[in-house]
Structures are given as C-alpha cells and as structure tokens.
Image (cartoon, rainbow, N blue to C red; front, side):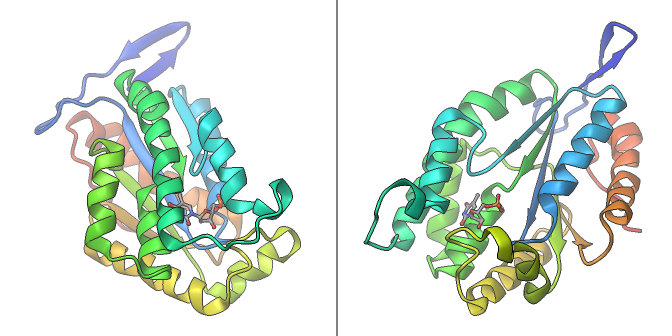
Amino acid sequence: MHRVASQQTQKIALKASASRRKGLFITCEGIEGSGKSTQARALARYLQSKGWQVLETREPGGTPVGEWIREMFLRPDRNWHATDPFTPECEVALMLAARSQHVVNQLLPALQQGAIVICDRFSDSTLAYQGFGRGIPLPVLQRLIRWATRGLTPDVTFLFDLPVSRGLQRRWHDADRLDREPAAFHQRVRKGFLTLAQQHARRIHTINADRSARTISQHLITLLEPLLTDGLRTRRLVIKRL
Ligand code: TMP
C-alpha cells in the first residue's frame, strides 16, 4: 500500500499472516441501479485525495479486451444484428474471459505495487447473475471463477442493496440487455447477493443503498477508515459494523 506524502512515497509493509500479497482489493456489488458505480467513483476520489494510490476499474471491462467484451455482452443490438439469444454458458464464458484479462494484466500488477483497487463488480456478480439469476450451478461457477482469477478474491466487498423496483426505476432511460430482463430475474439476483453476503459475512458488507449518495459515501468512509489505519497495518481485515 502506498501513501503519497509531499512528493515521497512511503511504503507500509503489511504483516500478512497467510499471504504476503500487498495492496487492498475492494469490490462494489449490487443490482441494477443500486448506485454502486457512483459510490465506487466517490470512494476512489476520496482515497486519492488522502494520498493513497488507487486503481478504479470495473467489470466486465477494465482492459481493452474486457471493454470490447462488455460492449458485446450488454449492447449486442448496437454492435451487430444478433438474432440468437445468449446462452447462460456463453454469458459465463464472456465474463470469465474478460475477468482473466483484467486480473492478470491489471489487478494483480496493481496489487503487487501496493495500490488500493476499487472494482465495480467482480466474481460475486457472476455468482448472482449467472448462478442465482440464470441457474448455472454454483459449484461449477466457483470452480471456473477460481481458475479464471488465479484464486484472487476481494479483501472487502460492499453490497449496495435496495428493492428491485427502486433500482430499475433509476435505469429505465438507458437500459442495456440485462436491465431489460424481467423483474423476477432481478429479484433472484438480489436474493443471490444477499445469500452470498450471509455466507461471507466477514468480507461482504451490506449497505442500505436506498439513501442519498452523500449519506452512503459518508457511511463507506466511516467503515473504511479504521481498516486503513489499524486494521490494515496488522492485516486484520475486519470492518466494524455501525
Ligand atoms: P453495470 O456495470 O452497469 O452494472 O453493468 C454490468 C452488467 O453486467 C450488469 O447487468 C451485471 C452484468 N454482469 C453479469 O451478468 N455477470 C458478471 O460476472 C458481471 C461482472 C456483470
């Protein structure tokens, strides 16, 4: 982790108990219209303003190949006259192809340099959308995800939660292929995220996203501050719940 202070870069060595990986990997997850992208951006700005080295990125995307896959995945109507619907397996293959590029070419090098990586969606989205949403068995996905990510998992995940109807309301004006899925699909995805949050309660922190952007930003900062001071130095990645 780097904190840049008056032209100097001071390295904080992390006492990693199990692994010696440097940096901090934060992911933001949630259903459509949950406001996670706005929050990821605000958090990145805040941490940068405090002198931390930050990589702000997203999935699918974050690399030239990943952004190309994103466009194909979300806007097929704009890019070619596709008449065949995506199969769930094809969706998984595309997401994992993009993720592999991202992990190997961007995320691992940034973490190795000690950056804070803030990623708008990562593997939990594949479990929620293609697993809970499309019905691909979770053990199959978990195995493929481990393979495609070389085992990289987030240190901290913020799950921005709100009712599906509220989220979709925010997205009606520029709906992409997934936004246009029926409400029942988005309900399964939301339930999936909440199930994952229960299963990984230490990593995934559920944030009430049905509040003003400013209030949510403040909440995230309050959660992260102790981690960046005490917790991080000892590599105890436990964030106190407010
Ligand atoms: P967003 O960045 O606006 O949230 O759009 C990304 C879309 O891609 C969103 O509908 C969720 C979907 N998605 C998946 O279905 N599986 C995945 O693994 C990821 C990363 C995203």
